[in-house]
Image (cartoon, rainbow, N blue to C red):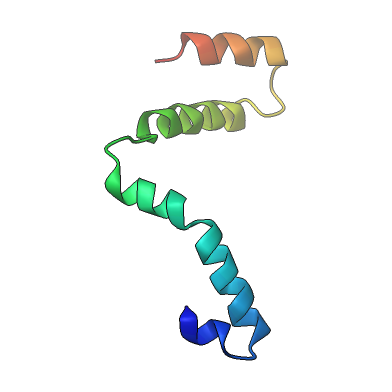
Amino acid sequence: MKAVQSSDLSELYSFITGLRRGFDAAKAVLTLPHSSGKVEGHINRVKVLKRQMYGRANPDLLRKRVLLAD
């Protein structure tokens, strides 16, 4: 990162700036015991149901199916 800062390559400098901005988040992902896996699973389930029902029913039926599905 230090070598890129002293260079004239603006693309790499922009990339390093982005890395520095997200460094704390990346470090937290690797070191903390928390996971968003369960939430991601629910989101995936809702998306699958939404795709299955596309063009077939109204939003009320989709809502019922999401709430009742296991």
